[in-house]
Length: 326
Image (cartoon, rainbow, N blue to C red; front, side):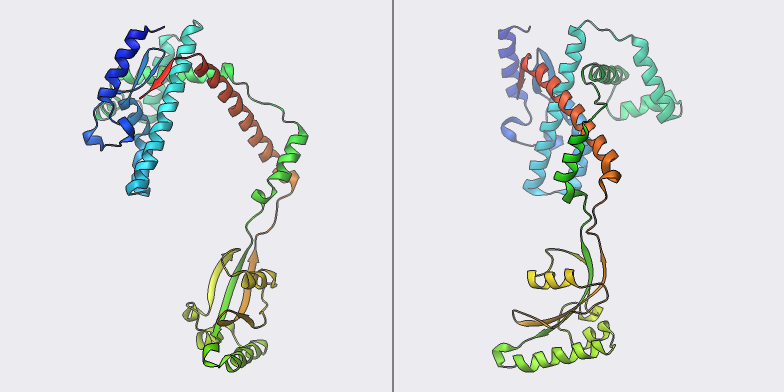
């Protein structure tokens, strides 16, 4: 166990060098290295955190800006640090239990990587490491730790092989809505203003009823929309495309989703407008049968059980460890 005096010294050193001290997220060009965490005397640096989170950060830069980008990067770095701490605890547990990993296992892993990813060209592999500021020694250390972590997880996290049938049935019933395909309608709309403020509501409704009559006699809905509608989709023949529930005002949604495909609604008065709707097609709203979904649910529950066991195992390692983050 690391001595308390040494821990205090490390803590002071970390605060002096920490690039993310007090939650600040400096640009990479301004970041100096420092101690991100101490795990039973082993040090995790900020360069290790950035090395792990780098690809994720590049993706975040393409998705977010400003304060949201800062928030997302901070969360990603915190998650990466947690992963590094967990990995260090697992490696320490491997050593504590006096397990050993023969060096030729690591050499074989490296040779496999060179063969599979670099066509067997060792020089290209070395140059790639150098371009990423890695030495072969550092790369082999990382691969060794990966092998150890995989082995320790296999030893301590037993894969669930049987899920009680009642639990599978219960999951299906509870999550039925998640398995149901979203209900959608392919909608066309004609909108006629009521002009009620000008006292023309009756005349405008008569126009809407006349349009409805023409549609009943076989007039094309898209042509009627182009001529009469004052909706923003007029030039598209009133075509709203595929819409889901919660897209329209509730009274219009109720009519649209209750109309059979190919049918035209009555004239609907809502607010300052009259509406005529037509549903071209309908899809979704169906739930796959339990028999069809059972294998998928069983697989998911097995994964959840394995994750639960892993979380308990890691929590046990953390409880016995000295961990300090900066």
